[in-house]
Amino acid sequence: LQLKQQKEYGDQFTATDTLNTTKAQANREYMKHVKIARIAARKDRGAFESLQLSGDRKRTLSGWLKQAKAFYANALANADLLAALAGFGITEAKLTAAQLQVLGVEQAFNRQLREKGEAQAATQRRDEAFDALQSWLADFIAVSRIALESESQYLEVLGVVQPA
Image (tube, rainbow, N blue to C red; front, side, top):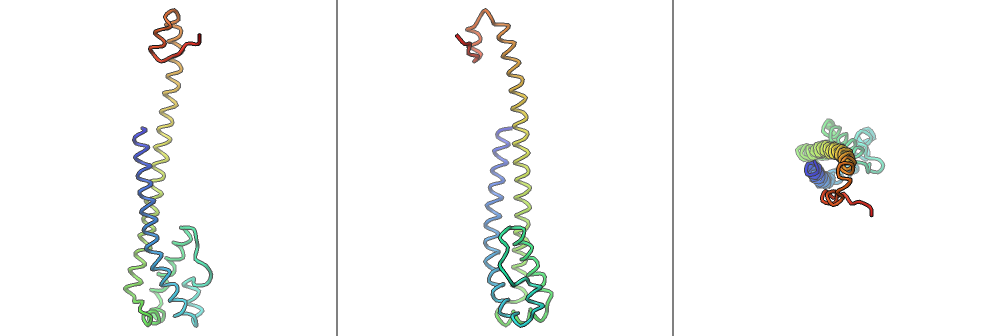
């Protein structure tokens, strides 16, 4: 159970590293698109609002995912905005590719959460087994002390140190 717990935490760390790398790559494209969209949509309040271009980007992963998914879904659904962005070199294909990167981040996040849950469950199983072993060992030592009361050296062979 100890080895299983260590394996699960290794899997969790790998999933976390993958998530961080995937998000960093997707965020680079997303931020470039947000900056250009702010210029392209500066006179279109509706597009500006639907793309959530005002204010700072969310710092939490769930907030970032929500903003990025809304940005790409709404950008790809607005023909006028697509035309405006194309004037800045951001084509529908580039937006679609970036949208897929954001969905990749969401998948990596879901995998990381699953691995985190598996690691926590493995820890719980290990700890429960350890508690059961501790309980059994306490009974074993108590019975050994009674059975080997006159032979204290045998207790020491078992690893039970007798107070002098």
